[in-house]
Length: 262
Image (cartoon, rainbow, N blue to C red):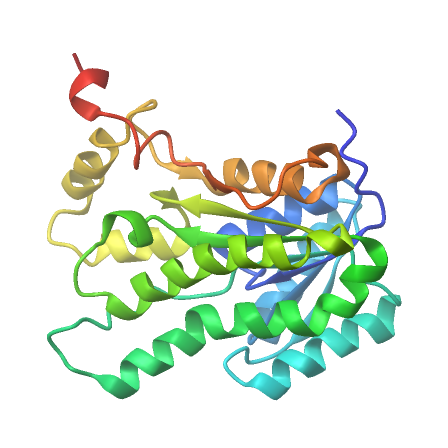
């Protein structure tokens, strides 16, 4: 299937590592020009160079997304460089463990800035170009908004906000032909996830336990599987899909595990 993404300029926040890196590489392989926006120039350039070595295009902009002005400047740099924006993937964020019992107001507010405020800012600043291109917005969100996790109030609240903003924007932007969807991630294997597992007393046992609870195949979702769906949702091929929360999670959130294992 031709996703019709050739030379489409698509911003990917946090696109240098993990899920974001997977998205960048798949978009580039489909002919798009992904633009990584992230705080680490070294990480950004490493991914750009890998994409270019594979014969594709990519670009990067260094920005600290918790800084509102940096969000605006990053979008403006993309516009100056390419003269257009065809898509936005809001992906950057961190599960930072700001829980309820700690009563950490400052930490809670900082978590919102790390995880949802810049989603709004990036969409706002990119909007004028997205109106021209009738582009698409794709928000990466987490199962924590549905299932909870414990000890991560800031992250869970942010993901609830990401989901709500997806449907709010889908309504507000209908008149411009801009589609807005979200992709909900549950258990996805990334370097960050691997590093977390290693901090546990028995990493292999814990990983096996987690995988046993993922109904489809009893395995982790891959970053490439997330990225493939992102590319589809950004493309004109999904032209009548908007306001949707798409779960790419092997059935983790919604399937009845008792029936699946019967």
